[in-house]
Image 1 (cartoon, helix red, strand yellow):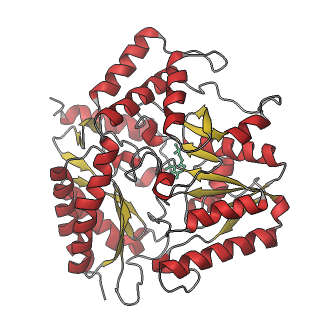
Image 2: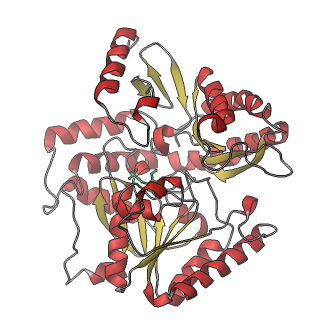
Image 3: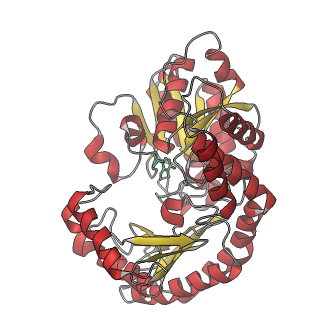
Amino acid sequence: STLDPAAGKAVYDADRAHVFHSWSAQGLISPLAVAGAEGSYFWDYDGNRYLDFASQLVNTNIGHQHPKVVAAIKAQADKLCMVQPAFANDARSEAARLITELAPGDLNRVFFTNGGAEANENAIRMARLHTGRHKVLSTYRSYHGATANAIALTGDPRRWPNETGVSGIVHFWGPYAYRSAFHADGEAQECERALAHLENTIVFEGAQTIAAIVLETVVGTAGILVPPPGYLAGVRALCDKYGIIFIADEVMAGFGRTGAWFAVDNWDITPDLITFAKGVNSGYVPLGGVIISDRIFETFRERPYPGGLTYSGHPLACAAAVATITAMRDEKIVENAKWLGESVIGPELRAMAARHASVGEVRGLGVFWAIELVKNKETREPLVAYNAAGPAAQPMNEFTAACKARGLWPFVNMNRTHVVPPCTSTEGEVKEGLAILDEALTVADAFCA
Ligand code: PLP
């Protein structure tokens, strides 16, 4: 019904004439005009359909156009589109109640934002005011958003052109056994050495100057780095020892992505603050937030919180969150994500790793997996160099093109492709996508030495 190449061309032309795109050299892109989407697929105006193995930007955990979420947004639009944050609102109250019910420990309050970057900005603000300290620690290999502090926290090249004007951010190395920063042999040693490195960083920065440590519970875009057993408990212990606030960034890892409601649930850890966005309502209407522990909440019981947003707790976004969380519970969508990881994606990826010269490592959990591509399995030299662009990125560009030509929309970052389909995916859809990746990896194998 959306097959209309002329309409697609008009959309494309107006985009090229007037839309300024994220992260791009404006003259070097040709955005696909998307006509529609449903479940695990989206399509263009020319009749090409793609299996969305990226869940857009790893956010449509419930798939495209879930009928209950669409209906809830329509119902809320009829009832009340907007009321400013100082009022109480039924959709917002219920979203906050559901989110805190799911969150671990004493994380009993929610400050709503429009997305993940603002969530991290506000979490840092809370930690600084609560502790009276200024510095914030985060890892190399991370992404925390594109606003001032969030991009400064980020440990990937997108920080480099954005470093002006922000002070007090210190980076350290997190665990990543496959490319250990600590010359460690195996996960246990990696964990031990990563924690020793973090404690050294704290001591040499001066514990009394550090407000917070911000970590992606499972690092997302920067590599799907699953922490080794004991690491997050070790970070929790260091935070307790030195009076530092533990902020878990679950913008990408939260709301089912790892096969648990929150990624911290996989290791039974309670941070002081959790930041979320994306999966909370699959991004049908922009929403993010900070889930706040009782202790930090108390800091602002008598003292005003100096932060706010016109759209904090927007009724349409909160109604979408209520419907999303309810549908995810009723339809056992988080359980499905866990099952897909354990029974389908994990075993299939390990088999593919054995077949392909270009696959150095596969890792992940739930519907949150990375395939790390290398030139040589022995040396582990990445298939393309860190931050490669232009001709240097050719092997990954050809791999990406091979996926798209076969009807798969992949998530590609540097020398990795991530397997991040919706949590609602069926076994058949996941197998269809993995079979395409399998074929496309043959293209990558040709670049191996
Ligand atoms: N934190 C993490 C871990 C993310 O993956 C992202 C976005 O990809 C963000 C923060 C920023 O979220 P937003 O783009 O909604 O500002």
